[in-house]
Amino acid sequence: MDYTPTIDISAVKAQTGSSSQHGVFSAASEANFAQKIQTYERILKEVPDSFMAWSHMSYFLARSGRYREALGAYVRTLNIKSNAPRIWFNYAVVLERLGYYSEAVESYSRALVVSPYYLKPMYGKCKNLYRLGHYKEALASYDQALAVKDGIYELWYGRGKVLIKLKRLDEAAENLEKALTLNPHVSKVWASLGQALMYQHEDEAAIRQFDKAIKLDANVALYWTYKGFLLKRLGRFDEALYCFDQAIDIEPAIADSWHHRGLVLMNLRRYQEAHNSFETALRFQAYDHKSWLSLGWALEKMGDYEQAIKAYNKSLSIEPDQSFAFYHQARCYANLQNVQSALEHLRRAIALHPETYMPQALNDPLLRDAQTQAILAQTPAAVTAS
Image (cartoon, rainbow, N blue to C red; front, side, top):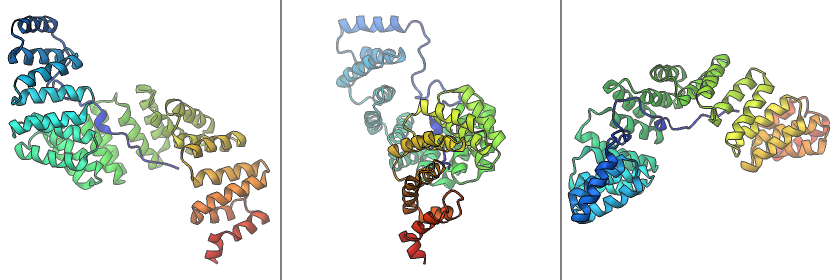
């Protein structure tokens, strides 16, 4: 029972010297922003339609983090003059900051209508198409940007992320390696390369990339979580446990870290600790069917069959038709001497995956009594096999 984490590495802040992830507005550090805003307010009282005053007012409102006010101010600016690409770009950044990604794409596009080779709106458009899940359009936009200038690591990195989403993993790895030749000091690029290799099941190579990401920034929980997952997949459970503990120390509220930590502890037969990890994962993500399923498995191993059945039922209420849950409920009912319920749940497991659970049941000491074998012999799968 396992699954690959799918958390997006791109959400991690870049370790880079740029002023801001949007390339225009850094955190307001100058104490005179408020004074500048007041100055332009006075000018606008005198000259209400001053393009210069509105454009500066919009900019300093945004720099001050007053994005909703900046949004209105940019609308006024663009009503006065609609063919200024820098204003469309800055307006798009504000829209992006407020989470209006579709509108940001439109505004970046308007900047490019006026100035087709303006690289900043090209990059902004790419990023927001990616955020919207429009991966093919994002890829085309990255290609356009790279045709203008191909020596920028962010463009190769972004293109690599898009290719991961499109499951073009060899190309993704090549793009991310290109980004790293341009700038080897950004931890999330190493981590994304690790992610691409992980999806190709090149686990040892992927671990090396996450190690490089961790060397650059050891305080990102996701890097430790992914490395732990890979070590777990390789059966290196003690090392994996260390990684998940590191991730949890950094960011205690990541349900995935607690869940995978629990799975490692199950492999180490430390069932009570695994149970506690799954319960913690569920505190942070109560509707995760995998953690309910794993909690049921831990309870079953601990001999608490009634509570295990309840946990399996919780998992099935979120994600029905899980053969693993039905089969293990059958085992729990068998342990509780409830033969009728055991057989009912066994039938459900076999109906979903006969190739797995029919031979397993026939060799299971709990489920291979004469009555069970007679019922199994009557299943459609058994009749077909005969």
